[in-house]
Structure formats: structure tokens, C-alpha cells
Image 1 (cartoon, rainbow, N blue to C red):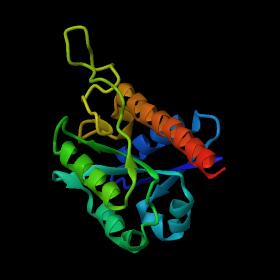
Image 2 (cartoon, one colour):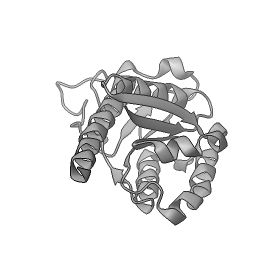
Image 3 (spheres, helix red, strand yellow):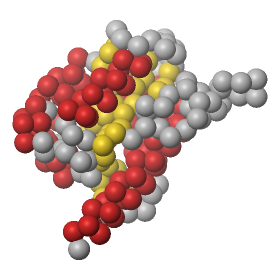
Length: 194
């Protein structure tokens, strides 16, 4: 069994809902166990992250970047960085905010750079942009047009239940994609060691 860990911070419940969608998608793939790890509980889960085959990072976009609690997790991971403990693990990311743009690209760039510093192998969304032609709609997968990871959006005066179904399905797609890449990569690692 291969493990995909989803490490996330959620200030108001939106990013937690997206994390659950990512986990559902990953768990759809046979041979994958998905584990949700909120950064508020990270001290209990470092060993799980070390043992995971893939780590998906999720943070809300606050003021054009990752939230402070997620940044604290990133900073605390420097002890793992010193030993390159996550080197060659599959990595991916997602973010949520109230604006359709709102600095999400900066958040994704921060997550990508963080993964690269750890020597991880970043995997993007693998979907063409949706909702970008007269034949498109807000019901399309990848309606916000990301290639770096899953982007989701809902109004700031609504709860997590207002996240569009297409955004949650895009997040589940990311989970499935990472699960499949993880299995493919793990299979090659196993084959190379035989």
C-alpha cells in the first residue's frame, strides 16, 4: 500500500473541504491510502510524512500567499530539509481563496518552491483550462485555469458548502492524478531495486 499524505491549513473550513476532496480522489485509486494531516496537529505526524510516498500541500491564499500557520509548518520542516528526508517523494499542491485570482499563483509558486527545496518531484494538475470558451461554463473542471495544482474559489461571506462542485471535482482529480503518478513512480523504484 502506498500513502499519499495531504498536509493542509484551513482557517474557515474551505481548504479543509478541498483537502477532503483531494483525499477522496486519491483513495479512489486501488493501492493508495490517503491521510489528512492538518498543520495544527503536525507535531504528531512528522513520521507519517517521512513514510509517505507523496505529499500534497494545501493552504488558503491569504493576502497573496500561504497562510501564516502553513508557513510555520514550512519553516518547521527545515529539520527534514537538512537531511533531505523528503527527496524524491511526489509532491503537489492546492489553494483556496475568495477571489478568482487573488494571489493564488503566488501561493502555488510558494508551494512549488518549497517542494523543490526538499528535492521533491512536483506534479501539476494535468488538465486543460476549463470555462475559457463560449462552449465552457463554471461547471467545467479546472474552471480557474491552473496547471500548477488545484485552485478553488468561493465567496468570502459563504461557508465551505458554497465551493462549486466543479472545483471540488477538480481537487479530486488532483488526488487521483497524484495517486496514479505515485503508483507509477513507486513501481519503477521497486523495479530498479530488484
